[in-house]
Each structure stands twice: as structure tokens, then as C-alpha cells.
Length: 358
Image 1 (cartoon, one colour):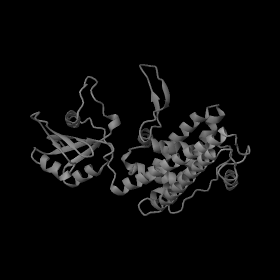
Image 2 (image 1 turned 90 degrees about the vertical axis):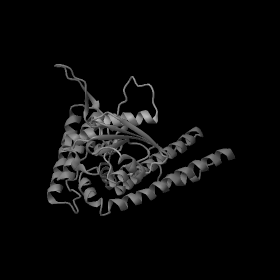
Image 3 (image 1 turned 90 degrees about the horizontal axis):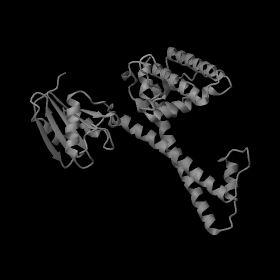
Image 4 (image 1 turned 180 degrees about the vertical axis):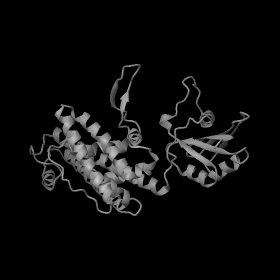
């Protein structure tokens, strides 16, 4: 569909700078809004020749403005900030110029789009990411306490697991020479316990979402693969949304940054590590899940297939066996663990895409 007018929006929490560019005449109109009120923007845009569409960059303001503009009849895209390049010679930056740049990029079709999630999906993504933040905070709190104890000359028995009931009993019976050291220890331990409680609360909320009518069917499909827990399956499902937007497995592997880099010219082909572009959380979860296939013990051939079609369960079984054989083959060739995991993660992404789209 040919568009007559392109509208660039430089959106901030309390202001919007807008620019409308007419493709035929080249005319530019600009306006600033003191508040990002969708109806005000729609009314202003109605004074230009249609059809038209708008764009703004992804960022902390989220997707609520885009959803509101689309619902009001003004088509609005959200551009991927990391992929939108500013001309190298442009040394003057302000909101008005940013809006003009967005309008020009939209008029030439140079906007790499971000998929706009619905409110339910966005809320689930926020929950998953908060749980990830809580896990990182718990790990950091444990490390702070461990480092403090090492400085004070305390170390737990070699070979025994930490953060068991026995370990916590050992912690509570430690004696310090200084009252200040004791006070610091108590605060560090309280930080760990508070972080653990928070992570457990969020984990329960995540499990409830995994069982919900919206996400349960996809979680059941993805968790058929060994190494993919219900949490991992939910996180991938809410981060991706509609798997069918990827035409094939390779496109999905590219999106999560698991394809290899390439620097080739003429007859010379040079490949390197994975690109590490795209969705970092999904990539991290796939890497974590892939370590299961590097373990020496045999995989249990039984697939957790409750509530999924028989063909999906069978495809998952084949995928698990394939990944286990692939990992063993790479290890037999002396490949480093990180190289094997990268290869298995890439294939795992492909199998998950297949399960999701069957």
C-alpha cells in the first residue's frame, strides 16, 4: 500500500516531537506536544493527506502509544533502536531533528520493525524479566556473603553443597570477634533471604502463568524438548509471541543471535562465533538448556507430552535424540564445550520453532 504521508515521533515520558513528511511535495510540518496523548496526535495528523503511517523508536516508553494510535486509526510502527543508524556526518541532535530523521527513514522503508505485543503478552514479559532480575539479585547477594566469609577466614566443608539446610545452620552458628562484623554478616544474610523469598514469589507467579489458558498450549509443546523447563518454555513463548512470523527455523535462529558470523570475500569464506544479536534472554535460556545434551549419561526417551498432539511429541523425541547424538559427535572430535553448546543451542532453537509451528 503506497503511503502519502510519513510521520516521525520522537517520544519521551512527558513530551512528543512530531514531524509529518509529504512524499509527493516534500513538505514538512512539525509540532511539539507537551503530553503523549494519542488523540491529540491523531487530530493533528488528520490535517495531512492520506494514507499515512507513523513511527517512533522502541525504548522505555513501551508500546502503549503505538497500540492507542493503531486503535484510533493511525497506523503506527515501532522501530528497533539498535538497528536504526544515524548518518555519520550528522553532528547535531535534538528532538525535532530526530523526528524528521524518523519520518524520512519511514518514507524510504528503512525502519526495522519491532513486533508490538498485546497488553497480556507485555505483562507476562515483564513478569519473566522481573524473575530473571530476581535470580541475578539472589546470585549477587550470595556472592557478597561468600566473599565476606572468605575475608573473615570462614569456608564451608569442601565437597558439600552450599545453601542447604545444613549450610544455613552452619551460618547461624558462626562467631565473629567484632560486633561490627556480626552486624555486617546479619545484614548480608538478610539480603540473601529476602532475595530468595522474592525469587520464590515470582517463580510461583510464573508457574501460574505457565498453566494459564493463554500460555499453557505453547508451554506444553516447547517443554517436550529435554532441558526446556516450564519456566524456560514460558519465557520463550512470551518473548517470541507468534512463532509463525518467522518463515523458517533459520530466521528464528537468526532472531535469537545463534547463527555464525561471516566475513567473506571472493572465494575466501571466514566464519566465526555466533552473532549474539537479537533477543538476549531467549538466547541465554537456549544455551542453559543445551548443556543437558553434553552430559555423558543417556537421555530418558520418554517425552513429557501431556496435552500435545502425538505428532508433536514424536517430533520432540526425534529432536532430543538428534541433539544428543550431535553433541556426542562434536565432543568426540575434540570440540570445546562452548563450541558444542553453541551448535546445540542453534539446533535446539530450530526444533523449538518446528514444535511451535506444527
